[in-house]
Image (cartoon, rainbow, N blue to C red; front, side, top):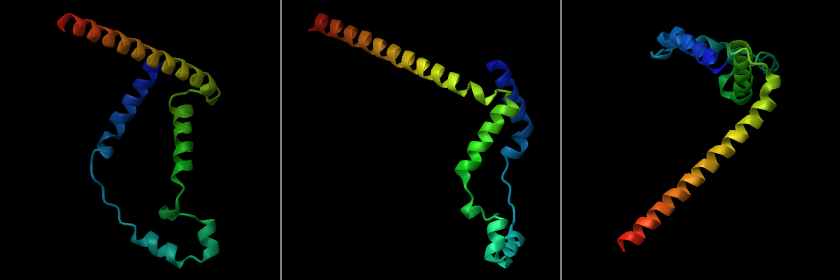
Amino acid sequence: MLVKGYQKIEKFLNVISYFATRTWLFRNKNTRNLWTKLNEEDQKLFMFDMGRFEWDSYFYTYIRGGRVYLLKDPLDTIPQGRVKYYKLKLAHYTLVTVLALIFLKLILVLWNLIF
């Protein structure tokens, strides 16, 4: 499953690399003029002021959509994934702790041999 996901990501990156690796300059003077001409009620109805855009909710929806539609991974697997993530995190920190203790013991043995 991960290999397929990485293959899809690589294919997607190859497609968008031209656009993602260049500098683009967009002029939005007309859009700003249109925004200033709208009254308050219309500004609330047609909210396209990027200064007040809710980026957090946008990216939350964006990431979930990428998961469902690009990776074909349903949202109902999130709880299982969290459980697996915490188990792997626990295993990681356990391994790091054991290796640190072994390293510390090795240093103590060498210290006692030298001094």
